[in-house]
Amino acid sequence: MPDLYTFRRFMTGAAALAALAFAVPAQAQGDLLVAPTRVVVSGGGGAEVILSNIGSEAATYRIALELRRMDEDGDINDVPEAEANATEQAGLGMVRYAPRRITLLPGQPQSVRISIRPPEGLADGEYRVHMSFRAVPPAIPAEQAGDAPATGVSIKLIPVYGITIPVIFRKGRLEATATLANPHLVTGDRGTFLELDMTRSGSRSVYGELIGKNAKGDTVFDLKGVAVYPEINRRVARVPLSPEQVVQLKGPVRIEYRELPENGGQLIADVATNIN
Amino acid sequence: MRNSLRIATVGAALAAASFATSANAAATATATATAEVLQTLTLTADSALDFGQIAANTGGTVTVNANSTVSSTGTLISTGTRAPAGFTVTGTPDAMVGVTLPSSAATLSDGAGHSMTVDTWNSNPNGAFQLNATTGASTFEVGGTLHVASGQTPGTYSGTFDVSVEYQ
Image (spheres, rainbow over the protein chains, first blue to last red):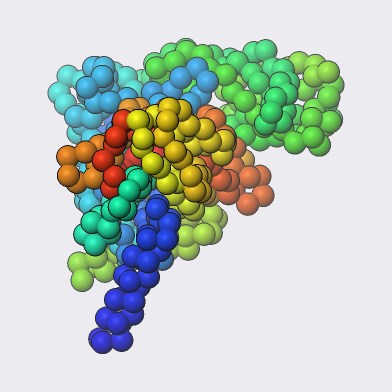
């Protein structure tokens, strides 16, 4: 297909020119979609996760297992494998998945199969790894790499960006409870937040949504997908509020922590207070 | 076309997932027995982390923060456009998303045995943030500090750094 070939030559040339013009060309190859964004397996079995290329060019994605720990601010921090504790190592050892590398055309989806193989005698508990889906950056063409400026230094820093999802395996009969406490407004550079303390006890994570209701029973905010993972017993949750929401919250409020509707929507914890 | 066959076996789920921008369709796509569903999450890169042009002199650092503030130390000369990397996350409206940055420095190499590092990674918003209540889309930026040695050999240095997002 000579036309396509010419076009691709042209595009390669254009990309090289762009690279010359700007020390760091924008890198949009590798945009991606992942669904679902949380996998929970109890007992045995597995799951499927769909990865789709939503970029405008073909891209290769690498799928890997990583470790994360939540801190008391609710941030999710990378844990190098060398620093893994016994529970995290057990998690890494029991998750099988395939494929590990996928090349997808634009708009093309593919599923990744996950199966959990708990070893004999595994202690009851919740085990979690984070499955990452990352675009492999294309190799930097030789003519670009060799095109060094005569003086000075130029930088080509390519983000290997992706999505991680928790893959949770629960063995045995696990229980957990949570409490909410100390809701209060905090105003800073980034606007007003409702801050509250969440505590967790028990042998598994808790996960749900935080719903704020005012005196009339109207839902003022609904913060979805709030987890407290087993490595922490308490965390702070910060709910961003618009000025309208702040006005609506004044007075007596009730904050509920509920399972997501698709998981039954049961109340996990709640707290009532007066917002001034 | 092995891929096509594989896609066919997953059938309806994949058909629904191909509507990448439709969050509601994706909810259907993932209704399997073992997965809790929080719809979809997408990540797109909008702009690259740009440290501009640098004349090394006796070295120093160039900092491009995620909030777009820039600074430099030492005797190096830093010019040109300096900007943090920009990304767009799209998912469930109102959901919290956390950004994970590299826990260590990234090394940039010129392919001829010379290197520099980038560390002090930071993101803006700092920490987890909530996706837009209407569109489900939000942007974030990533910045860091580049360390340039005294008499750093001129050339093009390339390297990678890992950024990932996850529902909190």
